[in-house]
Amino acid sequence: MNSLSFRPIHFIILFLSLIFLIAPHVLGSPDPSKPCYGKKIKGMQCIPEGYFIRGSNTHDPDEAPEQKIYLSDFYIDLYEVTNEDFSKCIEEGSCKDCLYNGNCDYIGPAYGDLYLKPKQPVLGVSWYTAKEYCEWVGKRLPTEAEWEKAARGPKGNLFPWGNKPANCKLAVIEEDERKGCVYKKINPPNLMPTAPVGSRPAGVYGLFDMAGNSWEWVHDWYSENYKVCGEACSGKDPKGPCEGEDNCPGYNKKTLKGGSWWWPASYARGSKRRAHFPQNYPEYHHFGFRCAKDAG
Image 1 (cartoon, rainbow, N blue to C red):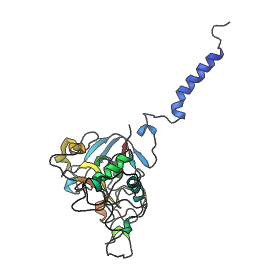
Image 2 (image 1 turned 90 degrees about the horizontal axis):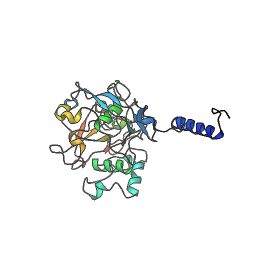
Image 3 (image 1 turned 30 degrees about the vertical axis):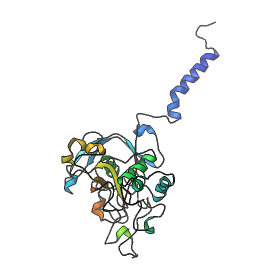
Image 4 (image 1 turned 45 degrees about the horizontal axis):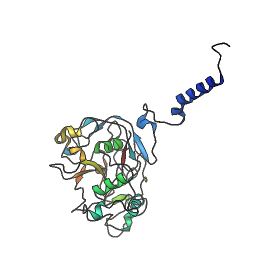
């Protein structure tokens, strides 16, 4: 018999070898050449690795200096966490930090039913409770740098849609003294509701409400500007002072981003920053959040 002739076993081996080679592409296995290894997560968007422009030299002093920051790829929620989402965490016995450990005085908006519809963003949570929820769903809070890149894109746009100022067609903000872009008066006066998440067009990465609707907690401690923060706010994948961990000497407030229905267009800029005590106490505010996740 010719030594080069194939037996049935040879064809089987050849067939299995071909399957091994093409299976990663056919079956959708991780591909390191693609952002987030080519994996998709329902309800989240992959933000590809690379540089982006963070901060601003021409707006508020705490936004300076403007600089290029490098981030690894990561996922971030398409929408702000809603009342419907958050209620599931409460019902399953999680998200207790605020109520049981004294890290804030109250869960939920003090304003009542106007803000409690299922698809409206959950409001009034502490930073601790936002963190607790994200961990409950297997995620985490985004860093300030991650949030800002997701809002502005790699070129540092002022807003998620570009550099055109915010208005009621693009974001849920205050416009012409109308809170939340609501035209009719309601009682009590000037108390207008948030909008259901996704009510405005998506931004540069396909995310919704990265400008307006609800202020959003991020991971980082708030520093008075990026120069003072130093190396903790620069380099690759910065997480801010003390990498955001508890008991950070000299820091007692966390950072919020995105503006809200209560504030005008200038507060909806992607580089805009706000500081507040993570307990959301003693001064209570209508803060919400969304979650992020490592790509690795």
